[in-house]
Amino acid sequence: MIALLKGTVVYRSIDHAVVDVGGVGYRLQIPLSTFYALPDEGPVQFHVHTHVREDAIQLFGFLTADERDMFILLISVTGIGPKLAVNILSHIPANDLLRALADGDAKRLATLPGIGKKTAERLVLELREKIRKRALTIPLPSPASPQKGETADLDDILSALVNLGYKEAQARKALATIEIRAEAPMEEILKGALKVLVR
Image (cartoon, rainbow, N blue to C red):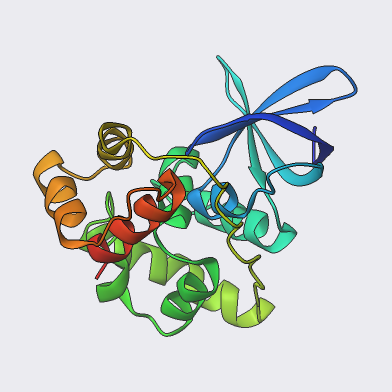
């Protein structure tokens, strides 16, 4: 089982990264929090969860061990698979998620894409006491600085938001409400749109 990878990121997108470790490329599925925090260059260390199914072996990468542990807690909940767990961590900072679960704030959780009222209540029911007993705290890395000279394509951002579970009309409306600088990189615009969508 792979638990840690240290190498150089040779490709990254909003939902996965490829890291070169000694000439071998590993494809890691990542949440947006990890995507934002990836450095522009140099070695990167990923805390990895290896998810084994009958038909596939999937690797999920996180920049902090605590965020990986939160992912593992999420997939322990009935009906929460890895894809939905990554989606949850992409739309709410892990420390805010901890707070919502510890406080039993199912209403806040139900606002996340892909999480309805019943799923939110199940998350609280199954994880509230686990979190309180473990007294989990998660320090998250700061978002990485945008690359200079990298211009965003609004069609790509719209597509990214739709892939994250938002309806196209919602995504377009969010993009229309934020101020977009001509030279703004994709990460900056995507983050601004997500802030509007999760209000």
